[in-house]
Length: 347
Length: 282
Image (tube, rainbow over all chains, first blue to last red; front, side):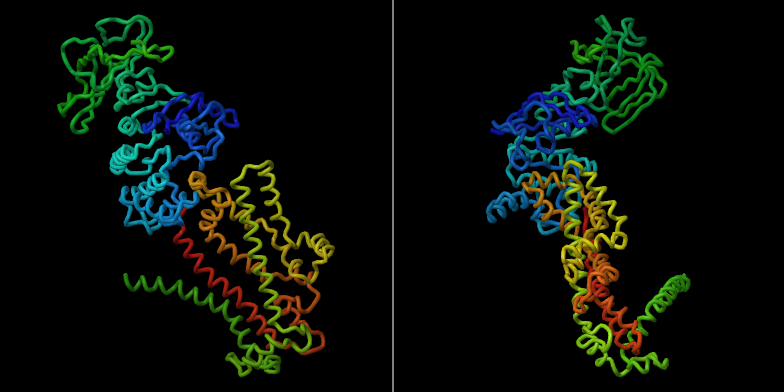
């Protein structure tokens, strides 16, 4: 068993700054957990605490059945992939991968077997004798992953591993990481600020904000039923339209079943459709900008002529002219209501 | 275009050649003087071509010594100088590497205080603290020993600072990767930090070897026995002779010999230095 359990884990820096404010998480054996959130939300700190690179100020962290708060990183049976790869520049690719095993006194032929196997899986066999500087970014990333998998650790930790790659390579490596993790069935924790990466990789998606977990669950659950305004705005691209509804209502917006109190209404751009009919929600907007991205297009409009901006996603490239008035409707199951005071989901 | 380019290529080369000539000419004269006999040099008619006494002069310089002043052959002094320069250079590098490692990678009480104390010693070279240092060395009975000659010169802030600056450019992730790979602090130092520092070590070795080789004041104070003298002192002693003819051909031979090891070090280390600069990537 190599599940990871965090119980109200806290990190307080010497200056008194609380980077992580009591996070509890359970990551099951073999699960791919993605921590996502804006810069400074504490996701990297949390990962580094699991790695043992940061001390834990409060709470407990266990890997398998063992509490590891006071265990050295080398003895936690984890492997980490860093954003800038952190390969040893003076060692060959082979030595980079073998270093951790040598330090643990693994027999030579066993090291050789494991390194060659990892190199075969990651397709870096031709470069084994090269130094890291003679490799491209993608190849370096593969070597960094090779260094992690040769150890056969209980947990993989990824700290924004794809951020230094270009867009095309990033998508390719994303798919490979997922495949690799499936094949090895190793518990993984992956930190990213890219919500698309998070959605596609995660078995369990954890959205963090200001040192706390906003919501954790299957990616599709977070997409369909965000429990807070923050998660609603963070997951999805383009972002969900969030409208603060005063008790008096907004001009240009009509709800089939009115709500009481001050609430925030959320509706995703892809759930709005242009139609003259009426729906659970109907909004009138004046087009201010349009974007065609190929298979689909985004219409930016001002609610009721001069209100807040609304984004509507439509298929195809049949774009309205700027300045035209349109009506967009949404079905009731696609409407999200949040408390304006607490940001917590109401429906 | 081609014409103009050649002119622009030629001009800097001409200037450089003139510069080299100005620097190299006295060295050439010294070498020439070391191949004539004393009489030819002192009567002012020494030609600017090598003379017939090359082998004889250098043999005398290295194995016999001058007739009056220093008595010891220059061979011994070169060995003394070499031991001193090597000990100083290697000692400084070894101590500085370790102290910079401590200051950069370990959190201990008064870490910054320790760093600033090291830093302040930059303002206190041997020349400034010469009396107390001499007193200590004398009290420890280290006069006329290699320990007395080198240890006070090993303490140095320059190399510590240089290595500290270099260590600070090494990404933290390398330390963290080492930790996860099961390498303790000393293993990280030996396996990762030292190989990455080769360039800086080479640069430091060149600087400190020449610094050690050129020491004059300190060896002058510490050494009294002839067999402990260094070559730099020997040159000085050879040309100041009260009532005898200065044996210029031997002084010049000594000067040429004194020049060779530093030149050798620069030439050899420069290759490593450049190689390291081109290949190392952090």
